[in-house]
Length: 189
Length: 157
Image 1 (tube, one colour):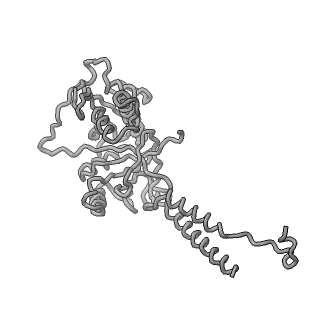
Image 2: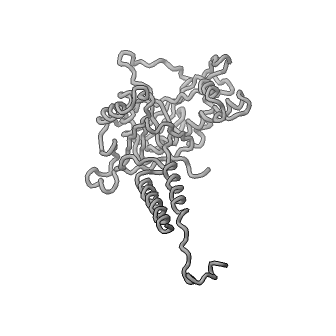
Image 3: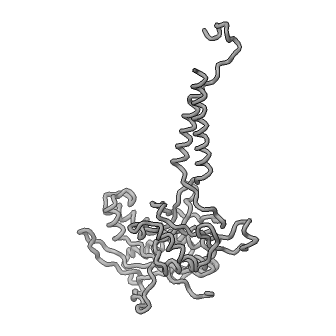
């Protein structure tokens, strides 16, 4: 009797081991994460002329084929890009060379929303790593601005601690306007 | 104690109970079932993802289509060279095949979920942007506009 009992338990362990091995072989660890983006739709051929954006409302961030970064027109180290973008988007001193702000009503309250657009341009020879690092800095700048905004308007809470409805308000008040320009036809095949 | 006193089996060591073994194995099993995911297709290109601190997790993994770009792994280099190639599903493809791939991925999803499809671009960090731009332009033409640049979280914190 006792012998039989032990043998059945032993087989459960064997079956469980088999299952365990199966899962070890067929599955992978690690989740998928990354920077999520929306591509602009292809413009219709009859309205190719894109809408005029005021000169002061646009900052051109360029990465050339040697992975050198240019923001506006001057060369820049990637370390300073985030602060430059934050200054560009907030325009604290109401500089006439930095983007205009527009009073927008969102969910019953009025906020000053920047009209700034970041235009990201790259060369065909830019390395993907450099490109993604710049993308990351841009997202980081916007995320920090959103954090600042939610701290100021929603009782000192960070953006990630807000409810979904509040997050939507913040997203509208601090939009992530990153335009990935059409690739430059320098050396296009 | 009394066990040692019994005369019938003085030298015999009682067998260790294996009752808990199955419990332990089951616990391991559940751990792996919960923390892992099914492996997708075999990778034929080498992809070392770049590091980015602001990554967000992909919520619906089942609604994503994967496009891998990188240089072929050693065993395929004889046939395909070391230039960056696009891998869709299980084979090397060109930019022109992306349209069919996206259409097939869309067909596999239900009507309501098609608009939520995310194209997951898994690109090696050493790849040049030229091929990535081509892929992006093709995706725009297929109006698969939601994309994600796959990246790793930095090791610290």
